[in-house]
Length: 386
Image 1: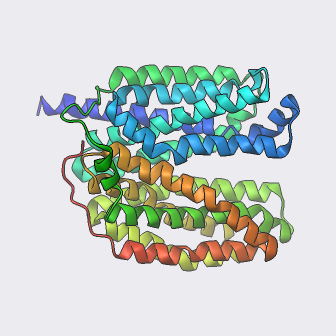
Image 2: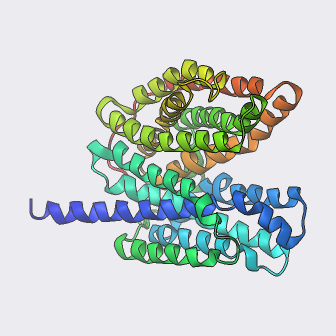
Image 3: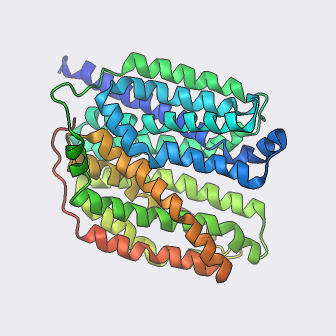
């Protein structure tokens, strides 16, 4: 018992450090969109140009995350976990100090690489050091750290471009803490070929990724259409902000509950149940408005239900590929979300030719094939992760 207690405390310290890194990393990322009007004014560019910054950040932080996860497995994972938030912080807090817009694009790309390196490394540390019977709970707490950061990022952005660099100190402190606490994370046993990495993305993990893309696109489509739907119904920015904040808080709560339930009842049953139970409630939410007394409670329930499967999906991917937890994590985190983000323009195009409510309902319909995919997934084994 005496030997086990220090090890458990060290494991908890590692999880706490990378969760803090997840918080500040995603807070930095959430600052970009609110600052686009200030960036447009400073650099004298078009709205399309500043919007392009978000696309660049999404590409390097999310879409390329599997490649960064592979690179992270070939190097020391400790550097990716520690330096990732530092790179993201320096990149996004110094946006107002670039001499020209092209340099700003490169800076945002570097910031995205920092985020892309961090996520698979952080998730891998949590997976490797969590108790097997609480792996889902620990993953959901790690996920909740990022959700909390995304909620506070716009608040940080409120200080303006000039004072933003002060927030880089938080990332530097978290990077130092993470580097001090985490052990080296190099897979030294053998050199893994690219063919073996390609083999990871087959079988149940490929189906799990497809399920996650459809679920993410359904959720993103609703969030994107929400301002337009509420505007059509006579509401403004206050109601939109309150609804999105409620949805975000519920996402964190739902992830924690879903993670713990998956530890007790299995990954796949929670994935199936979370998606199937969401569909009728989500349809009612899309057709409701703040005029209905149930709107905000229903927003919380739907946000919790649809996002309960996010950390569970990450843990399931890690257990499907126990020898490559960083790459499996990146497939389910950055690559699935980034791929869904690339398809989001189709929801906007549909809204242009129909209506925002119609586009939101079509997005919701993507949960049906997502649930069908979840129904065919096998339960992963809960073995040792590397």
